[in-house]
Length: 157
Image (cartoon, rainbow, N blue to C red; front, side, top):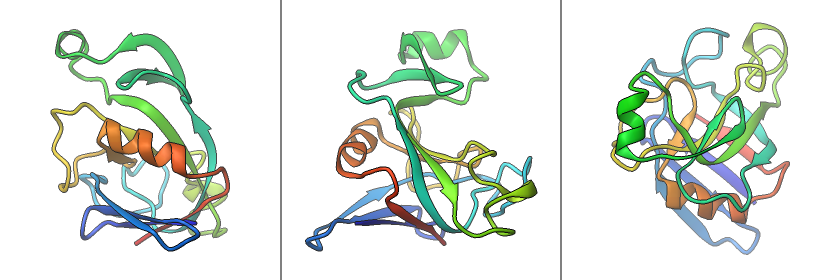
């Protein structure tokens, strides 16, 4: 079981133990790849899923600080909060495996709060528009969430 994220192709490929592959269109950072804290870039290298957040919540459930707000995303809610970076449906919180590259110090992916998460369905996929995380369609992130386990390897290139 593993996840491969291609920044160039804006895609996520999940391979499970029997070798069945699922491919999803994603959106990584509009600032490109990079590991530094505060950069807003998507970190590269070997990661793993450290935590799964949001099991059983409805599609488009809104998270702030990894907590469900009780809101469900809708265009009217987006109008009320135009500057919010929407984190919806599910969160797969990533932890870097490579000290000095994406773990510890000023390059720590987990301390940077790098997730795979849902985003509003009106947002395009296949183009880099996130603030560092890996955005997915809500139906896709819910499907992936249900397939993966904590500890699942994630490679971002």
